Structures are given as C-alpha cells and as structure tokens.
Amino acid sequence: MLELLPAPPVDPLWDLTAEYADDPRPERLDLVLGVYRDRTGRTPVMTAVKEAEIRLAERSGSKEYLGLSGNAAFNRAMLTMVLGGGDLTGRATAVQTVAGTGALRLLADLVRQTRPGTTVWISDPAYVNHRPILEGAGLTVRTYRWLDPAELLADLSAADRGDVVLLQGCCHNPTGVSPSPEVWEEIAGLAAAHGWVPFVDLAYHGLGDGLDTDLAPTRMLAERLPETLIAVSCSKNFGLYSDRTGCAIVLGTSARTLRHVETTLQNAARTLYSMPPDHGAAVVATILADERLRTAWRTELDTMRRRIGANRTALVAHLAALGHERQAEVLARQQGMFSMLPLTPAHMARMRRRSGIYGTSVGRINIAGVPADRVPCLARGIADALETAGG
Image (cartoon, rainbow, N blue to C red; front, side, top):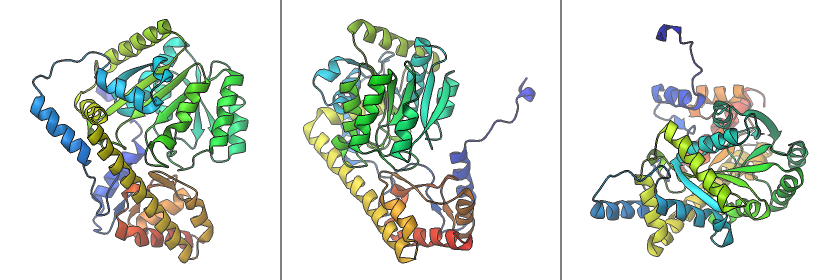
C-alpha cells in the first residue's frame, strides 16, 4: 500500500532548518524558525515559568484526564488576558488547544461545520501554515494584499457576507508590518457593513508595542462585531514552544450559540487528538492567577520586546552605514519577532551560500534570534547579497 504514496512536498521552514544543521560553518546563523533567543543566542525558560513549574511539581498528585476542553482555569485566564475582562468574557467561550496551530485548525473545522465551502481570506504574504491548515479543513482560500493599507481595505471590501477573514492581530508574520489603529477601525467597519467574520490569529502579543497595545485591535473587533474567532498561542510570549499550549476563543451573541460552539470544538478535538496536554496550560494558569508571578512574567516579556526592538534598530543603523538606506528604511517600519528583508529568493539563497545566514526564501528572518554581537555580521551579509546581485 505505502508504495502508492506519492512524494509529498517538504515543509520549507524545517527543510531550511535541516540544511542549517548540516552546514559545517561555525559562523552560520539560523534565523529561520520563530524562536526567541537572548543576547548569547540561548532560548531561555522564563523565570515565572520555572517557578510555576516548581509549584506544580510540589502539589501535583495526579495525571488524570481533564476533559475535551482542557484546563478550565487556563481557559478562563486566556479569556481575561485576551479580552481584558468585563462584558466581553460573558459573550465568549474558550477551549484549550494544541498550541496556536491546533486553535487555527479547530476554528477552521468550526467554520466548515457551520457553513461548508466557506471562503476564508488570508493575507498576501501570509504565515506559511495558514493556507495548508484552512485547505486541510476543506475551506476555500482567497487572499488580500497586506502591505499597503489602501490595497488591504480595497480587497477586504470584496469579502462577502458569511466569508471569514483571517487577520494577524499584531506583529504580522512574515512581514512585521502592522496596520495603524485607524486602519484597524476601518477593517472593523468593513466587517460590520459587509457581514464577514474576523478570525484573529494571536501568536506574538507582547512582543510588538506591549501586551495591552498589541491586544487592542482584537479587543476592538470583539467589541464592535457580533461574532469573532480568535486563535491564541502561548509559544512565544510564555516561551512554551515544545509544550504546545494554545486556546480557541469564540465570541457570539447568545448562550445557546456558545454552548453549541463549545461542543463542536470539543467534538473536533476528539477526532484529532482527544484532548490537549496539560503541562503548559497549568503553567500559564498558575502564572496568571498569581500577582507576583504575573508581574514577573510581564517584566520579562517587556525585556524580550525591548531586545527585539534593539536588534532591529541596530540592524537598521548598520545597514544604512553600509550604504543601503532604502532597505534600512523598510526594516525600520516593522515590529515584532520577524522582519521581512527587501530581498528576492535569489538574494536569500546567495546570502545563505556566501554568508551562512539562513532565512526563508520570501525574505523573512527571525530578528529575535540574532545574538547581539552578530547584528553587524547580518548587516554585512545582507549588503553582500545586494551588492553581488547589483541590488
């Protein structure tokens, strides 16, 4: 039977990661995967996470099943953190998922069961896994332009009633470009006027302009519109990459609807993985329930955000000093974990080959993964790729 299996496409990010691992050059630089690294290039476990894990280990007496919705305390904490508490949490239900990817898939399944054949709009460019997740759930995918606000609004004006529009709530992956508050207001106005449903992907909140500012567009959409879907990841802002901790949040207009939504999400989870692992969710719930741990987490998250910003500022300065002011200006307007270099796939291949600097073919690099002393090297690698190609 297995001999009939055609050769599948490889995942482009993990393929590049494997190529990096096989590269013998000690000076090579891995900027492919979205993982935060400190000034020395290490991915640390956050202090609040370590303390929460110690507390959990001391009081843990069972590994019993928690149920299809996962950790209830975690789900309540996610509703409060994402929506800011108040009346919005009363209009919402939440189900723990296997990271943000699991949340995206469960919500995609919810959309398909609600209205088979629904069109979901994603940004162009988009996070590499958005289209496969949505198409894997049997949905139709269309794109809207992201980088220019006028083009973005023009394209979303074509979304029809009943369509779903997938929006990254902050720190867009792969571009690092976020709409202004005024553009977010116009997006909400289009959703209200045309009757389409926003589907917000939250993976980097806290790493752009600060936690509450990064969550403000999502909260505004939830307040302004009758229905909103939200996929939340705890991988980046809690550093729980391998613990696969996430949440699917749905806002609706009635308690009856929300009960149906929760059951539908539970049933989808049951067929995919039954229930999510508890460890990361228990860690997050412990942190957010304790004022001291919550404060320590917010402080460390702000430190991470500032380091990412400092990396980007230093790269802009070094690139401008090397005579590439136009490219530096593009990078200066970006925020969050990723930057999209103004380089072609040929430039990126050249930079990988000549300088050992690994980013994706579309120009995305993990700015949070650059050790402080390697920023000048990164700038020189970009400049070399541009100059070798006459760019």
